[in-house]
Length: 261
Image (cartoon, rainbow, N blue to C red; front, top):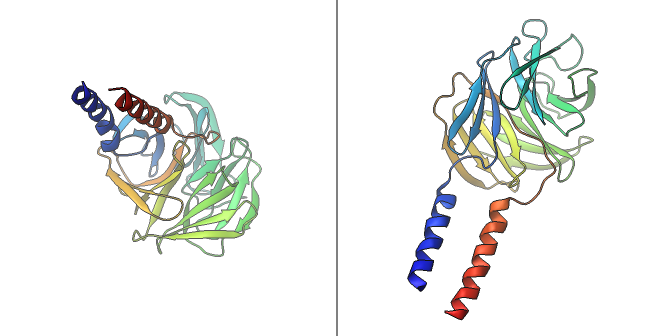
């Protein structure tokens, strides 16, 4: 009886521990006009073509909202359902606000992006209008950004020195992660487990880091076309991953059964 129980536990837990890649669905934009893909685990689970021009920055809630790369060349973002259907809504980048943008994020109320040239972090309305400069990071070549609801802050990835810096909502530097990957792109925070994911030099390998700066894993995703600079998980209020509680429950059951058998 004990051996059977041990085997069942192993059969259940081994696939979880061996699961590579993001726990939640990660929405990524391929540079530029290269389409949008959704990644979960170690594979693309769906993808679709873009309807705008130069779509690269991305914010995800109950819909996907992209933004154009720069003004005046590639200016048109678009809205999609989470399954990839174009809604007919477009977002046109003007000559105010961030000029060169590669990545975006949201807190569920506003969208945000970072200007590559100036390092300015900009807030937009949820429809990518009314840009407002919140603060500057003090550095150019800031390429990627993601919002962290656990402390109302932003993680900003640098293209060139391999750092990911955490800034408060008002621009104070909170912490710095130094990585061996020089060109940070497609930075995103998985709200299910609180880990950061990003690419290096727009490649198809995603790297997972804890917010304290420890590399946890990496996974190569086949089928991505073009360079990957924009990425976001769907924004949600952070809560513990369900797998964690399921695992704790099974461990507790295992302890009880051991005492009874």
